[in-house]
View 1 (tube, rainbow, N blue to C red):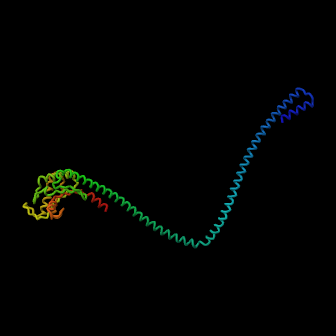
View 2: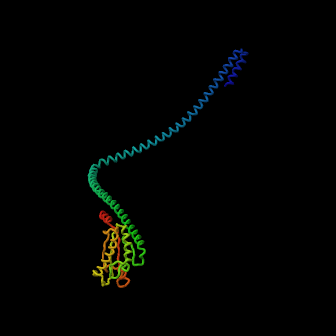
View 3: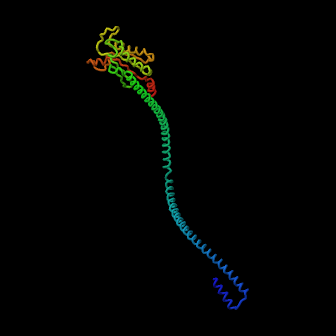
Amino acid sequence: MIKKIAIFFVLSAIMTGCVSKKVFNDLENKYADLKKEVRKVSDENEELMKAKNTLELDKSNLQKEYDQLKAERDKLQADYTAVNNNLKTLQSSYNALEKNSDEALQSNMNKNRELLAKLEAKEKALAAEQGRLNKLKADFEERSKRVAELEAMMSSKENAMKKLKETLSKALNGFEGKGLTVQQKDGKVYVSMENKLLFNSGSYAVSLEGKKAVVEVGKVLAVNPEISVLIEGHTDNDKFTGTVGGVENNWDLSTKRATAIVNIFGENKSINKQNLTAAGRGEFAPLMSNETTEGKAKNRRIEIILTPKLDEISKMLNEID
């Protein structure tokens, strides 16, 4: 474009012949102005092309969005039509049901009232049963607690008796092989002393060696005041023929021998005399058969039976019952 304008001015100058400097300068100035104008127009044209491209891209995106929205609208329209048709069908069915359901509805209402009445009665019964169940649960928990306490107490008693047996065994260790045994069974401790350690035949006077053993047992009893002590005298089944005064028979002899042991315990001021009981069993609780000499010797004995006091356990058992 600029070249065309320049050529135009050159041709004009040739055709018109020589021109003045002033005219030439004017032409140059116009040429410069036109050149600027052309650049401006060219820049504007470039900006317009960019704007055009942007607008065409926006148009393309809008067209895509339009097409998508139109497709969604068409789908919604189809769904609406289907739902509307279903609604009309349901409405027709409802109207038919409503027309013929008054009698059935009334019947159902009556049945519902009956069911509600039964339900209320069941709820009341259930509430009462729940209350009873809660009470039973509370009682069971309380009993379980008491049983646990009882078991702990019995275990403690058992351990105490085990320790007592060990203490007695240690204290009476020097009398092993002399007819003395210490056993623990059924929650009790049994100290058995044969007559050969304690008494002469037909006598209820305790020998010096026997008294030493009884005194050792007494020392253990003195530091265990919660133990009940039963001293039982036993004989064989031979008829009493001794010359000891005041003894009538085996039963009497066994009782006097048990009492003699109690009297030795009584010499220990630390032993609670209320814990002591003397009993004669005569020949009626033998350990072995009286048909042999060895059996008779085993049956002639003193048994000291140590039992933990069970007052608290009995009271707890009564509470549980």
